[in-house]
View 1 (cartoon, one colour):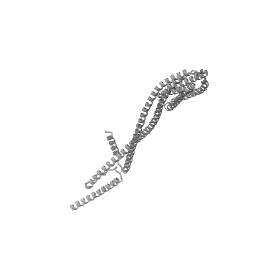
View 2 (view 1 turned 45 degrees about the vertical axis):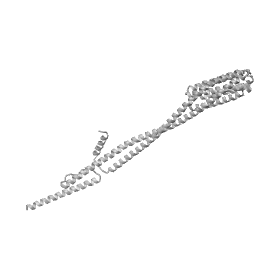
View 3 (view 1 turned 90 degrees about the vertical axis):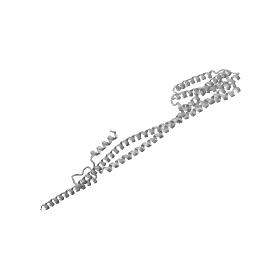
Length: 395
């Protein structure tokens, strides 16, 4: 009887225990369903014994490990997105700055190239002027020899013309005013403009001397024909020299705002010269002092010849310096172009970095989207992020 009661109690205990195990297995099944659905917020109950308890423990450990992995991955994706966003903003700003620098350098390179071309043009004009000045010096020497010959050959003269002297006096006054205006311009110009100013004055005086020489040659008759030819050549060379000076001055003397006034004054002087020429033509038959005038012309031409030689040296020095400046300008333009090319390469490199960072940001967002189906405690993710940030700061 007692034995039967004991067996009955054992069966009852087994039945109760079996019922409890079934409930625990059912709970585990529900727990695993939530895990499969992405809910990692709960922990498994660990109240079972034997194989059930072992199963609960193993599942709990596995879920805890999985929760930790998901939390770390979520924190990592958040850090990737945050960091890549900051880097993207920074690289975009740097890329914009590099693009602006590249554009500025390209503009500088273009300006340097234009400057080199302008300086090269000045250099060529200066070389032409140098050659013209040397030719003019040779012609002036020939004119001096011819003037001496005419002075010796001259034996007749004529009376001076009062009207012609008055006109010439007016021309001298106007020329003086022109010289004053040109000197005012020269005060605001550089050494090259000063040299050109002197050359222009020499050309004007040479033109006037050529005119006087032509007059004297006409007075001399047959003996002055050869000298008249040389005087005309000197006049042509003087006009050519003045023209070359104006071309160069148009490039390097843009600040000469008083040039218009000077031109107007010179035009008035030319008008007076034309009127004086008419009066002088009327007085040609009355000339009496050819020999004396020829000697004066000879002395003036010699003085101008000496002055011209010094100006030839000055123009040669200007030509040399212009060539040096042109060389430096070309080197500067080449260096600027190289810098522009390097900046463009840097901009391309920054663009590649920016693209890579944007790709990293997209990858982080994709990872974040993939992990969003799992629910994990926020405090775990925040703790992992704070730990990672502290590690990055070296704390």
